[in-house]
Length: 86
Image 1 (cartoon, rainbow, N blue to C red):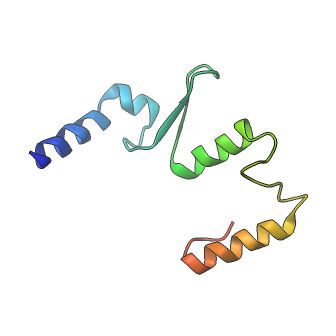
Image 2 (tube, rainbow, N blue to C red):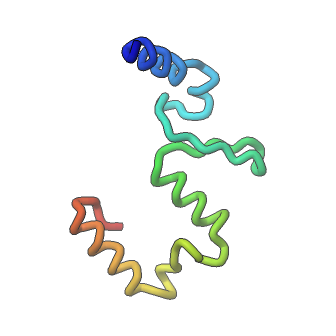
């Protein structure tokens, strides 16, 4: 049963309608219906898009030019968990 579900999911992501949203054929995909059905794919791109378009008060992010120490702290935190620094 599980193999069948995985096969169906893989087939869905290879459909032309999905590939139109994400040519890589993977999730996640976010479609901004307020911006002419603009598709955004790949996690980092989605997070950046949400930050730039939804977090205008910087409640969940920060301005690296105004708060450079926060950017340094973020880079150091990423280093500790094995992620690339910005």
